[in-house]
Length: 251
Image (cartoon, rainbow, N blue to C red):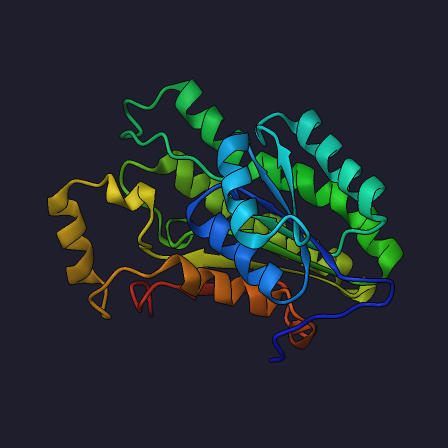
């Protein structure tokens, strides 16, 4: 795969949600390294600007937005198209957890996760499709989780959202295949991020025992998978779930 991506009329434009840290920030950097202009989306403007400083203001833009606010998120996508006259790549990475056993899970804990992890992807995809169709090219990559494939105790809300993301992506892939727009899921296992760093030490150690590679993945490894699926070379791959988990869920 070549390191640079080119398109008629200038650099391709990518939107990455949840781009203020961790996996999202690494995805944004990887896409910028391939020559795309990346629009960084998350709630925390200060963190977004720190990521932008690493990437370069000439290669990235900042759009502070709470993705659980569907109207605001759709406006961000529309503004990107207004500003850049195109939208080629969408990465729905934003996500939260509100873990609890299902017996104790509140409506708010369930609804908050569905809004941020699933509904926001639906809103962003819907807003992105028309500009991608006009450009006759598009790449949509939704960041799932192994929990969406296997379920996880204490994460019924999170697993439901990530499983729903797979169904959403596969349906979108079928609808858009003839339009040269692909849609795929990257499903990480346990990755070294702020979220996993907060796990109790006993849980962190347990992860290593069930992961055949006996280590946590790195955000860059997820970013590399996304960068490939967003490339010209991945034009015949759609409706797939690429699991990046060190062998955790192999069958």
